Structure formats: C-alpha cells, structure tokens
Image (cartoon, rainbow, N blue to C red; front, side):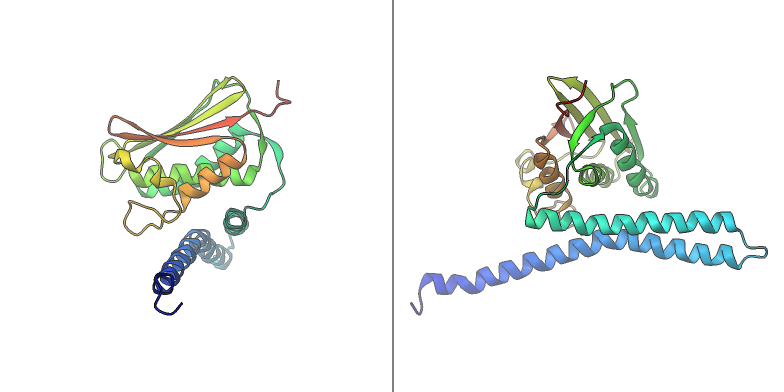
Length: 244
C-alpha cells in the first residue's frame, strides 16, 4: 500500500543491507591484504637475492617458500569467509590440537612483534589432544583470537598475550587466550561476537564472529570473560571419540 510503514522502512532496510555488505567486503579485503602484502615483500626480496653477485639461492628459495605459504593463507581466508556466509559443511578430519595451536601462534607472531607484545603458548605437559573437525578452520579461528588479543593490549604495560591449553576433562579440552589489555565493558561480552561489531577504531568486527562460528560448528563453545582488567577468551572443544 502506498505510503505504508512497510514502504517507508524499505529504503532504510536497503541502506542497512548495503552498508553491511560494504563493511563485509572491506573486512575480506583487509584480511586478504595481509598475506598479499607479505607475498609482494617476499617477491621483492627474492628478486634482490637473485640479482646479487653471486646470487643467494638459499635466501631466494626461502622467500619463495614464504610466498607459497602466504598464498595458501589468502586462499584459506576466502574459503573460511565463504563457509561462514553459506554455512556449508566442509570436510572434517582428526587433527592434533597442539600442532594447530603452534601454527596459529606462528601466524600471529609477526603482528605481536610489530606491536611489541610478548606472545606465549603453554601446553608443554598437556597430553596429546585429538580433535575431529575442520583443521584449517580451527587454525584460522585461533589465529583470530590471538591477533585480537594482541591488538587489545594497546598501550598497556606489560604487553602480553598468553595461550593456555587445559584438560582433558570430561572429554573436552579448553583453550584460553588472555591479554593484558584494558578489558571490555560487561555489556559487550556477547555483542563482541556479533558480525560487524567492533570496539576498535578502524576494525570491522568479523574475526570473533568467525571464530565462534568455527568453534561451535565443531561442537565447542567460545565465550569472553573479564579477569580483573584483563580479557580472557575461553574455547571448549570436544575430543575425538576415538581418542585414548
């Protein structure tokens, strides 16, 4: 009906949808730009090593290996965002949680070094934990949690992010990521997992939404907790039923 409330709301809905899509595209571009920038830097380095007299083949080969690694990461970002948006089921496999944690820490370490944040992982005495799920997705989810914690440290002192692996307990493992940042308002404990919600200037707020989606798809849970002035993310993951 002309002039109805529904008609009046339609332009607002279209604008909201367009704004959400614009922010989502910007987020994907931001996530992909990081490995692409690394690829460009390593390609330039490879060119310099090959142009040296004599050429440094070892360094050039190492740069090429980093290019392959970062190209794979860019492809993973696209695949994970596509799975998140379409909610399509992906192939599940049994993987060692400790190995995926180590990979996530290695990926987050360059950001931590640039931000002068100490990043530590503690799972030395934990029994081997076998998880059934999407290995690449879990690595991306943990990387998001670690990078989010690094960025949350801001200008605080000390500047530390610590990951702890706890368990097994009742067939589950617990991954805790804690930072020394200024914490978050209690009312944001759930909102921070909403797509496109962020308290950080210039960030679009998809990383935590993706992390929770990935962990819940694998039968786990992800929540945020204030510990004094610190923030702790707690991910609970079920062990593979065939694990000893």
